[in-house]
Length: 282
Picture 1 (cartoon, rainbow, N blue to C red):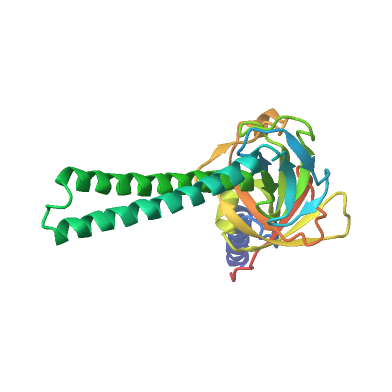
Picture 2 (picture 1 turned 30 degrees about the horizontal axis):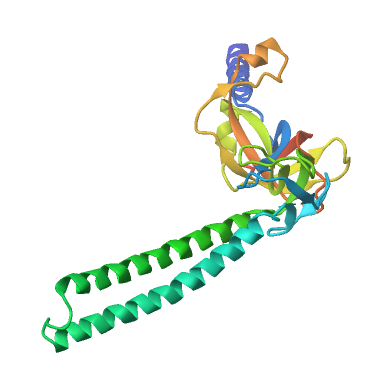
């Protein structure tokens, strides 16, 4: 009687051990994936297309600018007269071209009426060539005026998008050139947090997935966001990670875009990203 009880006890113990082993093998289910990184955004350096002395800069570091807002101007005291001269030259050459065209039409009409007796073929060819030269000169004048007007428009530096002035690199009186930036802008939209995920965490996240962002400097405040980009290739953990063991690990870059309507987040801020995970049924 004791033997069956012992066998039953051993069988129950084996089943319990098997379930316990399976529980140990199965990783614990998480409610959220926590990642760590830094706030990132795009920057743009603005330079004039012309080489001229800077007349004025209308913004300071930290100013918020809007698309099309004037940020700086060049000295145009020499360029404006060139535009005026080019415009006057164009009008003069247009009048001359109209007169030459009239002479060409008269010569052609006379040649046809007299069947070539009142005017020679050479004179007719000369009138035709003069009309072509006058027309070409008008076209050249118009192109020159267009170029000068473009240079005059380029003397005004405008904001390409909504941004914050990060640095004034030149000042009024400095000589500007296309190779020398005048202002550095930080584009405030979009902003994202650059984090790095282990290969084992990749199946848990996907583009468009909802996320929350927290920063140490704003305790108790959460910023809503979403997973916007997952790198298709692995890379070594960034050098900013000082632990030798982690530095040799392969990770994947993930960009979590964040909504920051009041512009509270700054470039390089350490941030914590919390990605809620959907529970799976067992």
